[in-house]
Image (cartoon, rainbow over all chains, first blue to last red):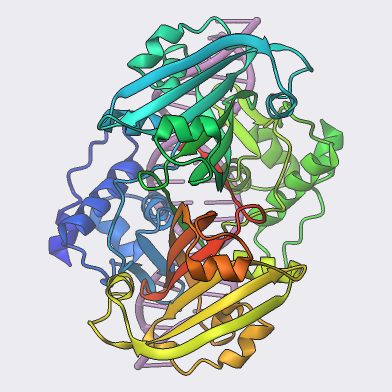
Length: 248
Length: 248
DNA sequence: GAGTGGTCTAGACCACTGA
DNA sequence: CAGTGGTCTAGACCACTCC
């Protein structure tokens, strides 16, 4: 077991990166490299803490991070093991930054519409504003490899009504919000499906009534205020959501 | 602030329920009752710990639980606040027990097929078994208020090939697995959409080609072994997935 | 009975926020 | 500057699993 623990020794105690985070990344890397194959057991928390010169709570927190992402599994009285499933960590389409990541793969976005207009009822409720408050509404069509695959309609809280929409061609919406100093913290999403509307059919070059994957989302900042509501539809052949659930 | 903290005083230190869990539930209840309205700030962790007679890590853990579920938001140097969004905690369709909960609302299930047969390639990969290993395959149609809305196809790891499928009419699959002593720990899901097949069209009383919402899932037990793979399709008018994301 | 993770304590120092 | 959450320590006791 000495061999394994030596892999984790290069921890930086002076830098700003928390020790539990550094350790979690090192364990994760060891799993992806195959040094910790699926089904193998980690050393117990006490010994691991001793060998690394860390306290047990710090080691526990590092392990907990990986348990939460579905990479490790813990059982009392038994130990901690690596999950057998292949690791598909790279795809996290349902993260807060899915749009941005996706745009890295295919940076083309066409701005179809932007206006400041009274909020529809659905938006009033989601953003917690008063009826008929003017909000910024934008509608974009996103391309991957020159194929349109996502229609994105967003309503932004009044504080963003002065957003420079010309930047949306080359930047994701969330990227713009971050540069304005907004911190996004919580998102509540609903994923469903329905038949394509006439607009979606025309934009996606698909028959009206063909299936589209839909996602509506309300986004909250770090003060707990709703800042954005979006209605998105995706061409299902080119987009899906991956989620990892962990029993609490 | 005394009034608030008094709400949390009835903690049971002798029972098996962890203190951080009891506290988290009490804070959650206070939010739902309106004692802690959206946007209001909690007392700081130190004072809260003093008043409750708990250590700060215990209080922090309780708060962290609620931050993870999107109910609270924390900012260093500022404090902890209640998120403004309405609480839709009751619907958690993407939990490990979604099928079971759903069946509580509408307990009718029709068993369409069950057989032990060599696993298709897709299942071989998902369950991490060798090619052509015989696995139990079941296909069920689930009804809500006598309307069929979900087609559930599942492949079970060989250890479950002797499952009593007659129980599936009145019980969820996961309920059966639990009664066999299996603990489900991690699930990896993919949610998408596509056109209904001829079979789905007939079962759902919808035209072939109409949209269906799809979910495929691999389930792992607490040893990290894959125990089940499922391909589900849903009538989108009657089913959708709700997800809360929290920035890490 | 030995070994494991689950919970909890009582401190400490630091980084960040906002007045 | 005072106040807040973020991190970390060095222990302790318990519940559970497996032999």
